[in-house]
Length: 534
Image 1: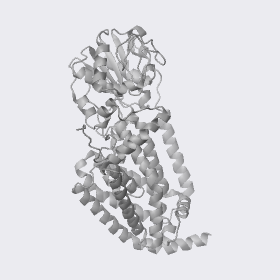
Image 2: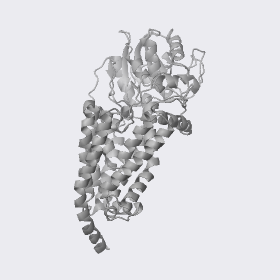
Image 3: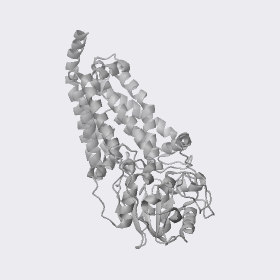
Image 4: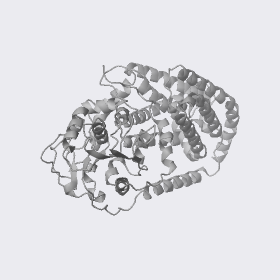
């Protein structure tokens, strides 16, 4: 058995050596085509452009992200998708050594097997950017990373160069080679660095494509060589190190509950987000006693409008005001939500603090900034989203991005299975998320000089904030290592809100959080420019 492997390696080595120059030529041609198409406006210019010349399967993932957001209907998506698959198959066969039947077959099977999972991953990331739902982004990212680490070395196994290899045989050889992590991990870091440069310096994006292609050529040269000794030992050691890093990140994010703040004057109103209902939502569980307010000073916003009270359910305090509301009320027209907000804060004791979670932050900000709620003295924006890069079209509306939009309408109802209800056709949903400009327009409205504002950010939301997590407010807290939904109940939230209300200095924030968006945004879909309906 060992003798056979050594013979295979010896036979493959000359082929791999002869293929080095060919790989550079092929990748140079592909790189030139991408540069030309991007420079002439055929391809969108976004940080993920550098992935179009990356190792498979990153290249196909980039293709699908472009096709979802750039094509104008199912026909163009399918036709251009088929053309992209054919082109990728031929390029991969050339990179493996030449256009033989065996190599073309292996390349075709490789890409066809990946189309569905990569398409779903790309669509999930698009939906996460559209609905501002970071859990979906991380799910899509994990799928792409796993597929890359498991399958990127497969076409370059010894069997692939010999010809006649099946995908399953090539994967088995790759596994026995330790997944070639000694090549793919440094390569992934290098490509991520190129993506960071493209994000930070957009004018350089097109010029960075040849650099990305050169990194790919170097990686292919390394992958075409035999794996180092004891590959499975190295694979196990690498997995153990990554597991320890992940465990350390998770176990060190928690803090002890702080001491409650001394009693404060005035009152506080809590606003839950979209898809909440009376007494159901994490904001209702927020402990206002930790902020210095007792139940007599605590009020809960109702999306249904003023009333004599709501079911308490998860709420810490009795809900003495507001009408009972259902999730559908959170998706009524934005103007109506702003109006009922203004009505509900009008007679509350001053100084008045309003804490709006996610969707609630948009409503509260717009009401205060437009002068409809002058009674608000301080705004606490809990998990706000200052911009949108998604956007979607109404059902059947033609235009760029229709395939992604149609799939969103098709898949979003499935979110009800994980207790998240979103009606893409509802007025507020389309006003705020269907168009890409609305969130930024809302937060561009200046608050009255006497109204202070605090932004509280979750670290898991950073990929959905391509322009950064700092907003034009009085204070931005350092991103908290807790999921978006749990922000209003985490100890760090109480600490930071109390510091803000007391006027205490803000602690320094580690620079690592400034790099979260540049590292992840290149794996998002191109920005879809969707304006208001005609």
